[in-house]
Length: 448
Image (cartoon, rainbow, N blue to C red; front, side):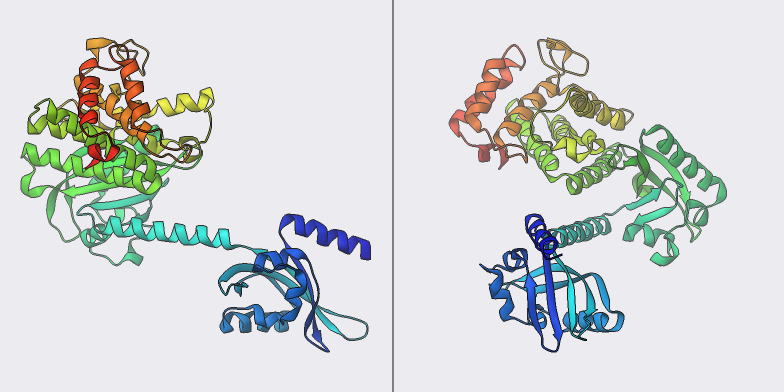
C-alpha cells in the first residue's frame, strides 16, 4: 500500500496535481504532500508547505469559512473553487476535492487533491469581458440587433430592440416575432428566418414596413445572416434592423444604412477574430491611400475603402482553429479558406451600390496570370479596384504580426510585389506603392 501511495504521488507530480493528507485532530498539520503543491504555490520544496496550516493558504476569509463549513457539514467537498496565497503574495485559483477520514484511533484527517485552475479562470474572465464588450457594442448601435436560435426564438438582443418592442428584457427572451407583430407580418419574418436557417444564405438589405406594438408603422431595412457553431453548422440567425422612415427614398441614405449594417457584421468579426478585423481595417487604409494617389473621386474612394473593410468578411463562417492555424493548411482547409471570397460575395451581391463592391471583393485574390481564385481571371478581366485590393492585402499581410508567425517586414513585402509585378500584380500599382514606400519606408506611413 505504501509503495502504491508513493507511486500515486509521483504520478500526480508529473501531471501537476497536488495530493495531500492533513491532520485535523488531535492537531492541525500537513502530514503528506507531493511536490506539485509546493511548485503550484511558488515554493522550492514541499517541506516549506508544512510550515502552514490549511487555513493559512486561503486568500479570502469568506471562502475559507465556506470550504471548512461544507467539509464539516458533508464530510467532503468536490471541486471547490477558491484562491490560495502564493509565496509572492499573489492569489492563485485552485479547485479542491477532499474527504474527511477517521482512523481506528479516532484521529481525523483530510485527504484530497488540489488542481491549478488559474488558466481556466483567466479564460472565464476573458470570455466574460468579451461578452460585456459585445453587449456594450450592441447596446450603442442605433439599430435593432437580435439573435434567434434554430427555432426562431429570441436569445439575445440590444437596448434599441427592447425599446422598439417596448418591453422589459425578461418579457422578450424566448419569444418569437408572433409575440410582437401582426400575424401576417410575423409570418413573413418567420419565413425569412427559416430560409436563412435552411440555406445558410443571408438576406441583406430587405426593405419592409413594420407595425410596432404601439400601433405606429415604420419603414425599415433588415439584414439577416446565419450563425454557425464550431463545426460550421447553422445554429441560428442574427438580424439587424434600421428604421429608415424619414429618408427611405434617398439613395445616399440607403447606401449609408447598408454600410452601417455591413459594418456591424465587421464588428461581429472583430469580436470573433480581432486579427482578421484589424487586417481588413488596415487594408482599407492602404487601398484608399493608393486610390487617392490615382485621383479618384469621393464616391469611388468610398467604394475602395468599403471593399477593404469588408474583403475578409466571409471568414466569419470559417472555424477559428483553421483561420489561425499555425503551420501549413491541409488541402481541404485551404479550400475552405478560399471560399471566403464567395461567401462575402453572396452576402452583398444583391445590394445596389454606386460602385462594384461585390465584384471587387470577389476578385481580390485573382492574379493577372490567371493563377488566382475563384475564377482564374486574367489581366483586364480583373477590376482595377480588385488589383489595388490585392496589392494592399499583400502589403498589409506581410508587414503585420499574425498569431502563427512574426511580421516579415516592408522589404519582404516589396520584394514579393516587385517579383510579381506585371505577372501577378498590376505593375502600375506596385510602382506607385514602391515609390511611396521609398519616400517613407515604414508600415506606419500607410496606416496613419
